[in-house]
Image (spheres, rainbow, N blue to C red):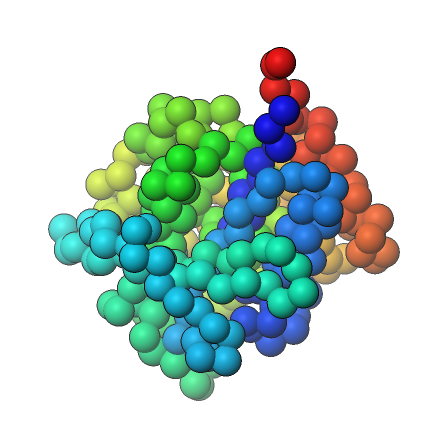
Length: 274
């Protein structure tokens, strides 16, 4: 019997980024799933402040080379990989010279949001999905953590990917972890997403691409919400409850919290027939 497959898409993963509640979740939640018998694939952006030599990243030529078009501009997709220390897991890094060479993650040295974060997050979401297709790997569950990954549910549920056999039946989990940002992304994101698909109902979320609106959109496409912090936006949690999403409640005991999330995975993954 094949192992159930869980795709983890994270904005930050320790030790490639500094230890934070989000990067720690990105590191240890996949390990807990792996140790419970899941087959996992883990993706994050190859932000420019990641030390490639220290972390032993190397390009995977067979997965690289695809061009992703955003607003009529081609952006080459580069895939790099590294092994998680002490664990038999790999991290796939989505890279591109247009978006990820600056020595920063989502903010510049002054703490200001990068002006092209809209296109960077679109590229990241599509890069993950295109790479999963190249891997010929069908995830039963897709778990997204960090706002930078929150366009991926839109792509899976509202664009051509929804009919792709690799994603058509995937359940989506999104994490609420209190990673709010001030202001909003470039409002031109609406035009760029319309090129991909969607409906007027979808684009009402993106007309004012604030943190709350991006997360509300992601929750609307999700099957479950994992509450990873005691300080999450109440309006988002209320929206999830009103829309009858499965809520995996916060637990300060990380071992028990990860167990609860894995129990949800188990509940929605149908066993393979003999």
